[in-house]
Image 1: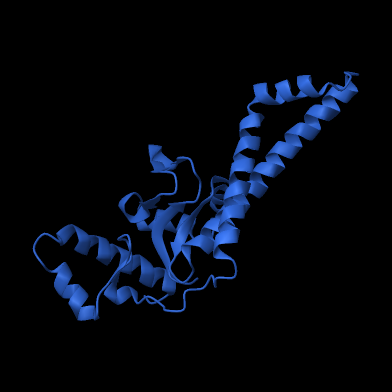
Image 2: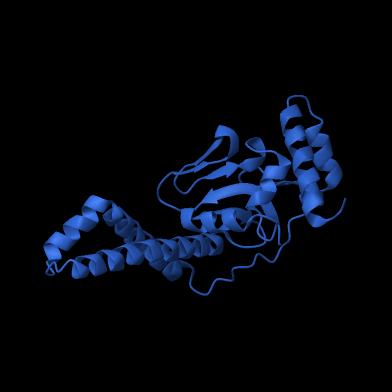
Length: 210
């Protein structure tokens, strides 16, 4: 699974709002991120992790939203590209299905083809916005593909979670495990210490170290 973190990233150029259980709304700013540990419980976090029981539906929605859990064994750009490509595919399926059904329906009713009237129906339905989103994402994908070229998507240096604060941006790496513990024991770092302990509990559970 790589070095999967609790950071939920938004590869979209618009705000993504995820309505979660019990009225919880996860709001992720454009090109932003959100610390899930501060929003959800450990059990709820598993729903966002690929391969976990019952997570299939959430994974499909994540693809449509263009969001992903940060994997520190991969570059951010490679994950963002995958997320945007998935979001384009999801939107294209929606858009093409609507357009095809609309065209078939008009044909059954004997309505002659009128490009301007057809485009107006698409606009009124709200699907013109979907087309704009698809075009916007395709432009982003083209830009990113050109910029990163053949850059390896895998980060060779593995991050040791026992000496790294994975939930900070960027992750803060300490020279040793003891150095990290000493930092967490400093006055004023109590909240961060609780976050780290909760993160490690979840990490060990996912890794099967319990």
